[in-house]
Length: 446
Image (cartoon, rainbow, N blue to C red; front, side, top):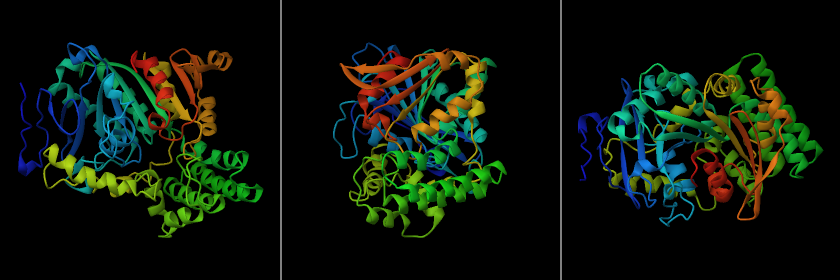
């Protein structure tokens, strides 16, 4: 039986969700709705039930997808640009995760996508607040979908999600241990993660020099700007460090003649591309555009296409209140977290490895720049955890899918690092075959 989503106009359709699958936007059965994670803070989720040939949905695992930013939308970018059943233009995606498992897109933190706050004072200010909101979201989700309580739960993320997901997984794990909710939380995998921001930034200049994108002079200018960022971090001047990170981006764009932040092999219009990103001469605008708007394909203006889709056909199909505009609070959401933006969460990953039974993974596209693989390798080397010596001694083995080398992996204890070939920042979209190996590693499907 299908039950229509009941909305209360005064409350902007919050907190009330259907308990059975229904038809939404695109193929297959779906469900969506809001959970009040705090007074004045309303978080949106969109669940796609698997289209696999199963007698019941709960035969397959549940995968959460968290986007980056902070302020980018999982229901938008992750869904239509990377792994949902339809792409941005309404075409069926061959490699959608929904074919193999149930997928839960969460617009997080509040203020992202369809999630919203009644006042800016309800926006999150730090990573722990984000994590606790997500735990409350899952409590509400399980209340509406108790059939998923025993289903293996896997958290996947990308970019700034690599800061949010570890602490979310840790807080959720402890909440389960305290008996606050029932959940079969099993793994967390961090995709091209912003887990240690300064390690990513310090990797920019060496990577571009080694790839021939900049010469020695360009390398020195980018490195100098990155080193200023590191100095501010060492002084714990977090807001200034965030601004200097933005300044380093500007230097990089000029010296590289407009290399793409998300995949260094993506064709751009060179200086014209750089000039578009730099045209406002506003560091905060540049930071927002590169981290939240994913403005990596200016010629096609994909961000505008996505915005039109989410504010038009999707908004209508999901019967979202007219008072909610997808993405309208994303800029202030990003700005609100500027003091926390450059803080690392390496210690959180260490705690996951040392104090929980969860499987933890990190995967990185080797063509990514903004969260460059060498920087990720560097922060992993800094971690202090129980199986560190075993990891250092472990062999790095090739990942073969259909007799094609798609990357490499290295495992010890409950941790695995994946290097994915022919992929930039968006591994699920750039190399679905490599991503399928990671999915099988953690979910047994893919």
